[in-house]
Image 1 (spheres, one colour):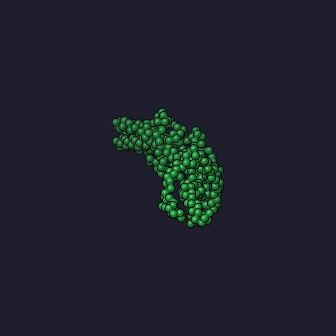
Image 2 (spheres, one colour; image 1 turned 90 degrees about the vertical axis):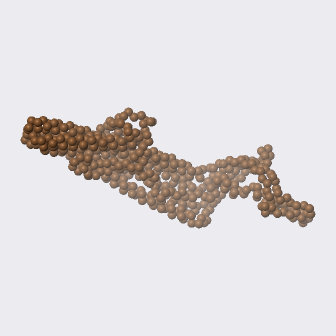
Image 3 (cartoon, one colour; image 1 turned 135 degrees about the vertical axis):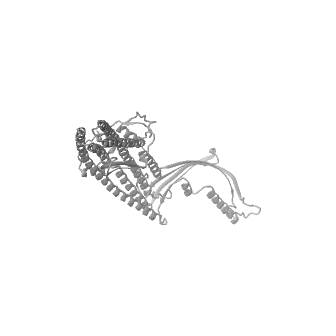
Length: 519
């Protein structure tokens, strides 16, 4: 073979090699196109705080301030509901309402329609979806493709210039048009990636934390709805007491008026008894207004229309609570509180994220393969396949791994601090409820005796007034004392029942212990 012929053959081979490179992409390019984890997994950065995104809360507070009327300073309990827990979805369409609401039905409606657990339930779904996405990096990924290609190349435009040292002969600069089709399935699988595995474990812990937050939200709903129901009962009892006091004041005014007509008493006694009657009327109007507002608040928590006219069917009298040992109660609270379990799961999630950040510098191994048929047309096609394994060894990432580790450590430290704070909060709530329960129990006993003495005093002063021994000043004072004693007893019973409910919430068993709490 002559030297010129060898040069022509060499140039033709070079052109063929260039043409193959242009038409067939390299294996690495195919691997990237299939979405294989050729770059390795990075740590998923969690939010700095592990607390739930919703800012709602339910708290029972008690302060030693006077009640609505002039009475002695007693523990005045209030249930405070904020955020999503103060609202609800409409429940009457799916669950018909008879017009009489029991405590059990109120709790059931609240658990089903209150926005607190409803919103957190959607957060669980979102977290579960995120965990599935993270898990996909560890699962096989299979994709199929069908491509039909029609192409024409300008070799000179691509930098290919071939000269043939034969007079009158020239190599064409335009190749094509030509066509081919490719039907192919591609599979990628991660064999080992410590960062991706830790990311999945972290996402699973976030799901578990959100599930525990939903259980804690149900306990908060029991506290909110149960406390609101107790408030309605107390408001209703105040109205009934005020109505009885009004009847007594009216009877006294009529009796004084008759005695004035007979010339037995002075006009000032009539005026004094009338003022007492008008005061009782004003007090009754105020308490009726408060009852209506409390019923609206309960309706908002349970999904009933605010304009719904209904009545509460349960009356919850005073029942002494079972003696408790505080240390045992605190231990059970740490074992049962769902929000504490959620905080612990958040710490575990942050710990796995730290592991994932450190694992970014570890090698990762993945395999990929494809099989398909390629040819000018289906009748003139042939099967082809490829199989490759990729070992990725990070050498230098520009400081990114160090930054990811620092962020992950910050999140872990924040969640650990929140866990310790929550333990102190639980102990504080438990001690508050424990002290409130003891104080309310003592107050009930005192109020019961106060009512007995006040009734006896009112009867004696009325007898003295009827006998003309004294004027009606003592009668009015005795009546006010009885009214205050009645309200003190109502407040004390409400405070005692709310303290029992708060104690069950502090222990994390409000929903489970409710049937036995108010028998």
